[in-house]
Amino acid sequence: MTVRDLSLAQFRSWPRLDLELDRRPMAIFGPNGSGKTNILEAVSMLAPGRGLRAVPAPDQARQGRDAGWRIRARIGDHEVATTAPPGQSRGVVIDDKQVPQTTLGRLLRVIWLVPAMDRLWSDGPETRRRFMDRVALSLFPDHAEHALAYDKSMRERNRLLKDQVTDPGWYRALEAQMAAAGAALTRNRQAALTRIMAAQDQDATGFPAAVLTLMPGEGQADDPDEESIAARLAAMRARDLAAGRSLTGPHRADLGAHWGPQQMPAALSSTGEQKALLLSLVLANARALSDQPVVLLLDEVAAHLDAERRAALYDRITALPAQTLLTGTGPELFTDFGARTRRLSVRKDGGASSAEEIE
Image (cartoon, rainbow, N blue to C red; front, side, top):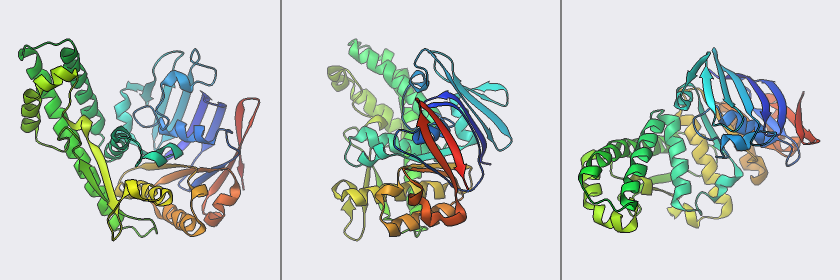
C-alpha cells in the first residue's frame, strides 16, 4: 500500500499540485527556494504530528495564517484528506470519516531526513529524543498515544509543582499515569533501537553502522518499570518542588551512538561521517519496516555524498521496500539512478511553484 495520488491546494508555495505516484523513486529537482521541500513536507503531513518542519498548521498556508490549505492522497484503497481551515489546527479524514491524527500512523509510515537533522549529534538531548521518538512511532503506532498521555500528565504535575502544592494526594494519580505511559514509551524506544541495529547488521550499503543506546541523562530515563518510575517520582517531589518542574522520567532521555572498530562516539566524528551515520540509521529504519507501507523522504542528501556513496545510496533505495522521494538542485545529482527513477522538475515564478515531469 503506497501513496498513489497526491493533491495539494494552497500549501506552502503550491497553489495547486496533482501528482500520480508509483513504487519508483521520484527525484525532485530545481533551484533553491523553488518548492521542492514543500512537496516532501506535504507528504510528511500524512503522518501524525507537525511534519518534517515541525511548524503549526496556520504557518503552512500559502496565503498566510488567515488562510487555509488542503492535502489529499490516495493510500492504497483509502482516500485521505488533511486540512487546516483558516487559523485553525489541522484535521484528518479517512474514507469520509473524521479521525484523530494518530490514525494516520496505522495507515502509513513516513520517515524523513532533512538538512536540519545534520545537527543531530551536536544539538541538545531534545533533538535526539525527538528523532528517537519518530523512529519509535514508525515502528510502534501506539507510541503517539503513550507520548500524548505522558505529556498531559506531566504538564498537570508541573502545574502543581509551579503552584507549590504540597498535598501528596494531588500527585498520586498523575504520577501513576506518568509511570504507566512513561514505561510504555521507554519499552518502545528500547525495542526500536534494537530493531534498527538488527536492520543495520543485515544491510551492506557502504554506510557506517552504529551501536545505539538509550541514555538515562539526569533522570534515570531508561527505566521501563512502571512501579519504579512511580516510586522515583514520589521520592523526587521535594526536589521537583524546588525546581518547579519534573526532573526525572523518560522526558529526560537521550540517544547515544558510537560506531566502527574504535567505537567512535557520533558526537566526535567528522561532519561527513555524522551525515553518513544518520543516513545509515534512516535507511535501517526503512528496512526494519519491510512488512509495512513506508514512504521515505530524503531532502538534499545527494549533494553531500561522494560519488561512491551516492551510487550506493541509490542502489539501496531501489532495493528498499519503500516509496522514496528525493530532492536536489539539479538532475545531474541523480544520474546514477539511470532509468530506475522518475524525475520532476520544479520552478517558482511570482511566488507560486509549478512542476513538470521529465522523461
